[in-house]
Length: 619
Image 1 (cartoon, rainbow, N blue to C red):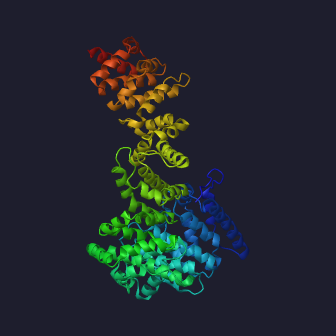
Image 2 (tube, rainbow, N blue to C red):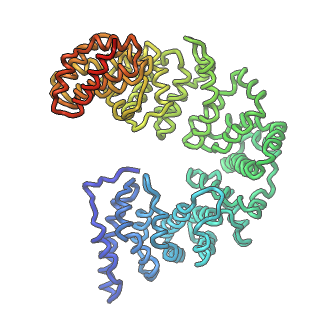
Image 3 (cartoon, one colour):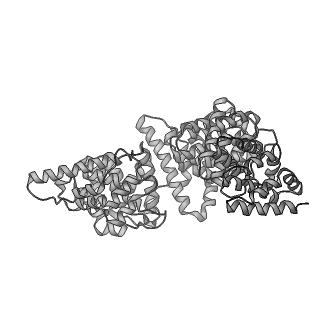
């Protein structure tokens, strides 16, 4: 979704609210005029919010009472007088925000279901598509955990909401998209609740039938709805009817042949087997190990490998990868054999080509440990133990392609993590990869509010390779990293990584000589004084012109820089070795310190007095 231009399309929702509150009464001409005014308001809301991540705009509309007023209109106005813009405006406001889910907020302020559910009686498919989308979305917004009953269940059932949604599902004059969302909505509403007998088989059968739908949202949400319903024993019995877990391996080995429809049915049967098997394993958790052992004996591992190799890539669900992850420990010998034959990773890495983010996440979880183990076991200056195998099967290109596809932040994080582990102790295989991966970590280092350990560790591993240094140091990275360190660590003690320490501290020293930029000088004094709290940084701080740097800091006309210079000296004395203390005493002029005792700034005076006593105490 795009970002809303909040400067060019600012809306005064209080004005809109006044228009929406105009009583819908009078002659037909008067009603048409009112309707036109209200539709114009709604069209402006739609233009501002539709397909845009505008949390501020949605929050303003809700707080102003626009969502509540639209709910009231939909609840009270004659169906023949309800227009599409009224419904679409409510849909745009209630759509989940980028950082805030507004659906439960809207529900708490004013229950929208009495108004929305009555619209199911509309005859217009275009309007019904938006209506059922809103119903399904707000129901989904009320789900806070996997296992508990739906919090809106009682209130919706009390106004016959379940039957109304089911009646829409049963209608012959609506399109498949409407029926699909209606079935998914019922699955969400009856989470952990038994479906009425009239609904049970038709809803469950329909949900099963769309788990291989071409549309990603439809197939993923139908799987979730089946999972919700399976939490009830009676629903579970209906869902598992006719399923034989030990026949799954045979099903997966079925060749995908025939005409288009026959091929689709074979693919669908395989996908549904995984869904039901995952539900069974979740339900029979206590017997999971025994079930998995029986499945392995029945050939499930070999069948999975065949499935990954032959199934249409974008029809493979994350469930199948997660099941392989579950059987890894019991199927260790089989997996090790495939690894020895170099036939395991080609089949698994191939799945990174999927457009399904959940599949990609599951594949990463499946192989990340192997990559990490290969890196950990690599001897000094030796490559990752998996490097040759992954390289030979085109795995490096596959992972780098995943990074370049930029599907989301996690996929890029995961891809770079795998590549850094794979290229442990060696340069990246081509210039483009080196440049893009290093710049990715440089940007992460500089721009994130809090640097995570993996990013920091990976940048250190990259910096160990001499061939990477030129790229790392480009674009004034060290100066920018220093600023980032200042912003991120506050007053925390930090040890600069060995591979970067000299470059960072040397750059800080050079920054102290920027005579025309007092801000840069002050920044260098702040960061150096913080780094001085860690003894491992002292050797690089105290060599090459330390006395000159101190003189620059404490002779500035800005008290904050003087103070940080004094703190730098104190930190070197407090945390340093005896040898360091002697070098500091030699580098610092007592006359300069005595002069500072007469300074106008009290912090400088107090610190200078303390430092003077300490320097005289050192023998």
